Image (tube, rainbow, N blue to C red; front, side, top):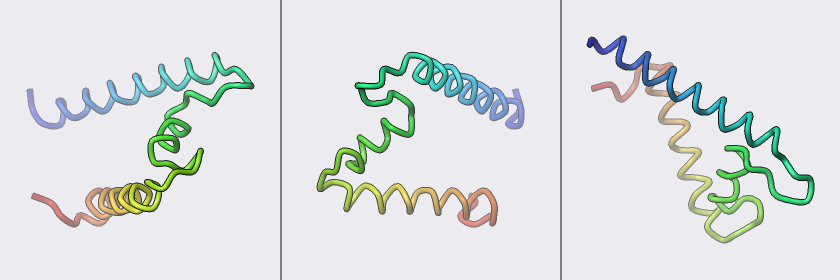
Length: 80
């Protein structure tokens, strides 16, 4: 299997599984409980909501990772 097909299958599987879990979280939402969506979960892990001291480390790390992905994918920087 070549690289294009391998990465296409990986990306398709990732997107389908994300859509499945996100849909499940949105449809089973209980108003009194925290959301189980990926966004809400990552915010809890990073200490954004509810607020936790780890947010001062994890939010900049996550932002730097997103900036790296942008530069890597869009601008072609940091390529092997």
